[in-house]
Image 1 (cartoon, rainbow, N blue to C red):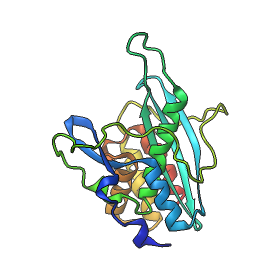
Image 2: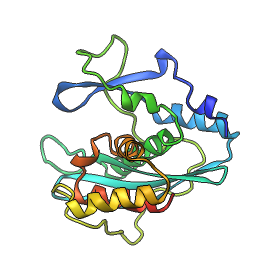
Image 3: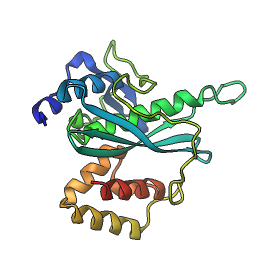
Length: 219
């Protein structure tokens, strides 16, 4: 595995910006840029598939659990996208586009577990206004690469737990137990949670904690 190429920083022109929570400006790269990096690193011999997805009515968002496989190594990550609605009628504009965007988010986070753009997740600083020429709008759509499956009208999976509340102490203990059984140190487990969900481990919801436990078990 060409870790040097996977972890190589992106060109400044490839890095976009968007507004995150609490007014912070976050750096990110578009899905096609990550796809290109994976193609270069693995000579196109990689695959991505959506394992599960769910539409959350309470939070008005879609959740996707994606699986990236390359050279016998599998990484799973969670992606999400707020459902876009018409300002006038509040009707959903395109649920398909929202699911594709969540899939892209999952792919990028799974790729970060291989080192692709990982530094962007660990260095999110409140930089003020976006730099001139950089877009605040994340890309939609599943990147054009070797993805195998997209979310479809198959049996809708169920994610465990209450999606709106914080993870339980039992789930937190399970996360560390599973992670350490896979040879991970405490810091590595926390870093994986940050890379996967873009939030501190202690702030995961019950649903996210369940997904993270499943992802750790799959390592």
